[in-house]
Amino acid sequence: MSANPVPSILEDKFGIVQERLWQEPFWLIIAVVFLNQTTGRAAMPVFWALKARYITIENIANADVTELRTMIEHLGLGNQRSKRIVEIAKVWLTNPPTRSRRYRTLHYPSPGDGKSMKSADILEDDVEITPGALELGHMPGCKQYAYDSWRIFCRDVLRGVADDYRGLNAKDFENFEPEWKRVVPLDKELRACLRWMWLREGYIWDPLTGEKRFATSEEMAQAIRGQMEIEDPQERKFARQAVENSAADAGKYHREVTDVGNDADPVTETLAQ
Image 1 (cartoon, one colour):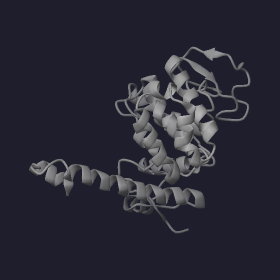
Image 2: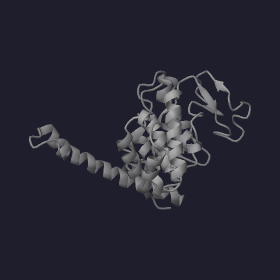
Image 3: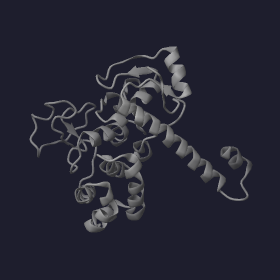
């Protein structure tokens, strides 16, 4: 099997939108609503336009559903999505996800999880592993893709156990395991991203089982060059898109730096190079 192009593991990001929004968890979940059953190429320009138009959660919660639908209806499911976005914003304002309040997530992450809870039950505790209950479980319409994205990119910060999703400044470093390492998503884009994140740790990860093995020196050399073996064609497509996204972000950064002003100092000029 030939190696597929991916961002080098020396890069800071793989190239999916969740990596850009982890510090804005509400907007991360709204982006997931846009991506559900829609390609990122079509959905993301509309998402960024909506984010720029409404700016705050309050504005979304008070938005005119008809106006929202007009913005997004060409993506499909316009009526359903516009209502869902407003519903999520209203719940987020009155009852945002918080540490030590978990709500039932029936059959997540595994079949049967949450069956012992009633739909109205709230678990008021903070635990590391949460079969059948999650801080995001009360958000309207959120299912596995949203839950997985939340766990990978937002949960550690919400719980106060680290300063980012990669374990920065972990409070109990010796015993700390980032939440993303416990996620086995069904979404092919998240799988491709987690393969890459595990490679950065020196492992080949199996997205079907969650098992891993040490990467060989050849596999690590490939990963540094920006290559990774991916059998699934859908994952390969998302990996190639991540390369394009990384290149686009690099180009955007280059333009932002070079546009700082006509009197750019030597540091700015060096960054631009």
